[in-house]
Image (cartoon, rainbow, N blue to C red; front, top):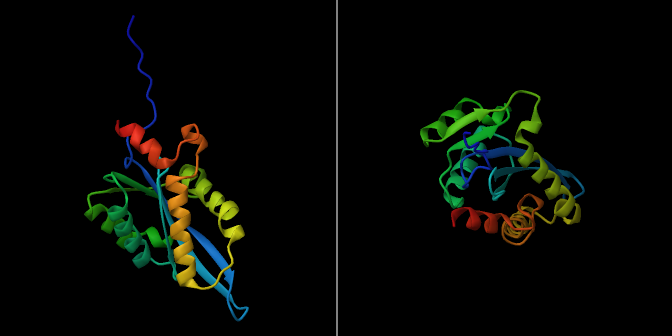
Length: 174
């Protein structure tokens, strides 16, 4: 009788990266609304994330963010999955492909296909933004960097039986 091999989780990081944008609204010092955009990348296998805040929601910023995650992630990226929003269109697509990374669009109106990044945005809202007092962009960027480090190195994840994303990555590399 042939041995049946079950396909397990992706063995190492970088195979699939989900990328999306979280829209933020804060009350500025004068009481006026301030809009910011959190670009987020999360690795399917390890849940390692990278975050960056931008003042505008553009293809140029999406391209900058991809360059940021290429430098930041501790593994080679094979594929990036995004929705079909304007910031991920032609210039972005070809920039990613020129970097030797496959760019795949999820099916329109199907955010569940990028469910890990969507779920991570919910964690951002519940565990970070809900407790944040906006004092300006410099303060926001510093606090976001702390949150990203906490998420990756200290926060236990149910997907990894209570291990952090970097502990999961270490285990996959051993």
